[in-house]
Every structure is written in structure tokens, then in C-alpha cells.
Amino acid sequence: MTIWLYILFAFAIVSVFLEDYLKDRDKLCIYIVIIASMLFFAAMRDVTTTPDSEAYEKMFYGKSNIFANFVEPTFTVIADIVRFLGYGVGAVFLIYAIINIVTKGFLIYKISMFPLTTICVYISHLYLLHDMIQIRAGAAAAFLFMATYYIIKERKIYAAIAVGVAILFHFSAVLGLVLLFYNNKPLDNLRMWILRCVLPAGLFLYAIKFNIFSIVPGFIGGLKMEVYKSQAEMGMMDSISLVEDPLILLRILVFGYTLYFYNTIKEYTEYASILLKIMGTSLFIFLMFLCINRIFAYRLSELLYIADPVIMTYMIYTIRPVWVGKTIIVVANAAVIFWCVEVLKYVQ
Image 1 (cartoon, rainbow, N blue to C red):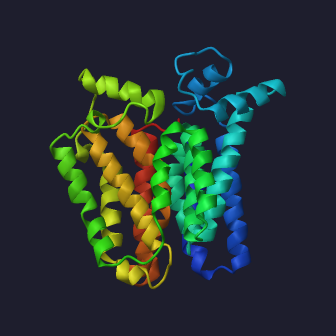
Image 2: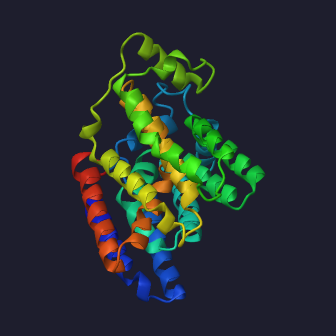
Image 3: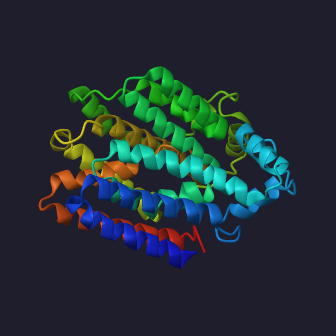
């Protein structure tokens, strides 16, 4: 599996540097080939190749009731339908792969000026995380991405529906309700300063070990939140140092860089405003929860990683010649996929 993943990523890298020279039709064909390959690998993987696949298999065949109270209704319905039709857990992986990859692939092509570069960035991390491992969270993230698209198009009702569907796929997607308060208007001085304060504020809460569970009502977040809250009260939460995760440090760097060059970037794309708000929210939530429980901090913030692949390509607008910016993006994400596969063991 690892070899095929590296081959797919290498093909995506080649497409990054060909992107500016391709006709739109050829660009779309290559993009479809990449999406189809991602879909194939995610749907046809063996349950031993990713950390959560065996757990999904046990849940599907009713061999594990440990998380029975935590499983969203969509997984239960999909699993019941697949069993009724006489198929195995592989069909569940296929359905989630279609929902996750096709939805996000379509939206990336609609939003990004550099879709082939963006999908290359996506493959290095989010593809492994949300389409191979956390497939329920990946489906929720797909609908939150859809909500973002509708907010950009000023269709808040459709955005609210998309957030509602996301929650049915993963209860933690209740976080997506904050998207409904956002818009895609250009950032004025006040909002720029608010975004500039996101990292300092998050780092301050991290430094003082602020416990958000002490003020969050118990009914918010469902049973999972109750478990995390109980663990916090008993002092059972685990945390890590911020510098232990190079992926988070890269996200902080990209966010700061994009914010610094916002006035340049906004001349080329109309989507920078809302994507920066989403990425800033994700980073703030991560920093706020990191000192309490690293797993909860990751799970919650990762639902809003949807902005990251597009935002990283904005570097291209700030560096000349273009190939230099693309080279930096490719090298950075080659390091990311190496870290995810060889160190974090996302796939085997």
C-alpha cells in the first residue's frame, strides 16, 4: 500500500509542475485520474493497512460494542444497508470513499486556482487522515467544506443543511455551526487584527493550561464530550508539547505567512478571507484543547483542516517565478507525507 501511495504522490508532483502549461481539458483529465486513483486505493485497501480499519470491521460485524453509544446514525444506517445487500465491510469503505473524496475533489476544483497543486497537498496528509483512517470524520469534513462553498456563494440555508448532514456523520462536527457566522467579505483592519490575535490568544490559553471543560455545558458534544469532561475532572487527560508535532508548526507557519501577504493574495483569489477564518479557528481550538487532551484537540481541530490545502497554494501568488513557490510547496508536503507514513504510520 505504501509503495502505491508514493507512486500516486509522485504522479501528483509531476502534475503540479505541468499545471501551468496544460489546457483546461487536459488539466481536468489528469485531475480525474488522480481522484479516481485516490478513490480506488481508499476503497480497496486491506483492513490491516490503516489503524482504524480493523475497528470498523469489528463494528460492522458486531464484534465490538465498545463504541456503540458513540457511533453516528449514518454509519449504522450505511452498515445495515450493506449487510442487508449481502456485502462486506469493503462496501462501507467504498461508500465513505465516494462521499469523502468525490465531494472534496469536486469542491477543490471549484475553489482552487491550482487544483492539481491543491490535490497534491491534500494527498500528503488529509487523504491519509480522513479518507483512509477517520472515514466518519472525513465525511463530516466533506460536508463542512460544502457548507463553506455555500457560504462563499451566500447561500446560508444550504450551508446550514450541509452542517446538519456533517453532524449526522460525526457528532464533533457541531463545531461547524461556527461557519454559519462567517462570510467571505474582504478582511478589514478589525478582522485582520482579530486573526492576528488568534495564535497569541491560543498560545496564552495553552500556556496557562486553561480547562474549557470547566465551563462547557454537559449536553454539548454528546457522550464523547461527557467522557472527556469526566477524564479532565479526574486528572486523566494527556497532553503534549507543541513543538513535538511538526505538522502543527507547519500549519502555524502557513497561516502566519498567508495572513501577512493577505493584501497581495486577495488580488488573485476571492476565497482567502473565509479560508483564513476557518484555518484560524482550527488552530485556536487546537491550542485551547492541547494542554487538556491531545486526542480531543486533534479530532476537533482536524474537522476544519478543509481550508489548509487551498491556503497552502496561496504561496504561489507571493513568490516569483511561480515554479519556486511550487517547489517549496512540493518539498514541504513531501516531508509531510514521509512523516505521516514513516513516523506516524498512517498506512502500512
